[in-house]
Image (cartoon, rainbow, N blue to C red; front, side, top):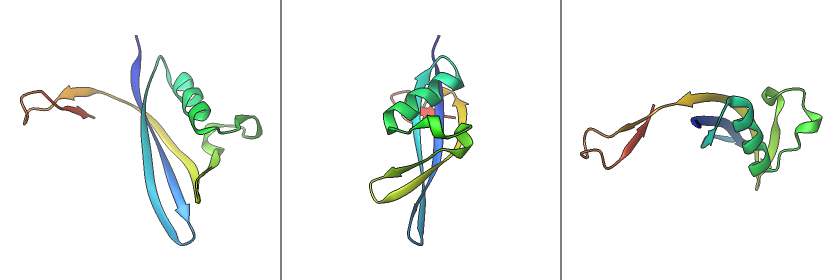
Amino acid sequence: MEKLFSISYKLRYAETSDWGSEYLRANNKKQALSLFAKKRKISTAKFKSSDDWCWEEGVWSAQFWNITQVKEIPCPHCSGTGIIKI
């Protein structure tokens, strides 16, 4: 059964910084990281671990921050039509 993972990363451009994250469905963390690397075209061969990943997002420079498994629950405020990821 596939689980939902949140992959967070730090974005930098000159003196500006921001955070990004992406949700992916995968069987485990390793598969989620592999899917993320493929989607972002990260050349993983030159890095020892995902903690060292760096890549370009247009003019932004991005660096892996963390990966966590998240749960989805129905939103109690909109009668379950929305989904909250925790």
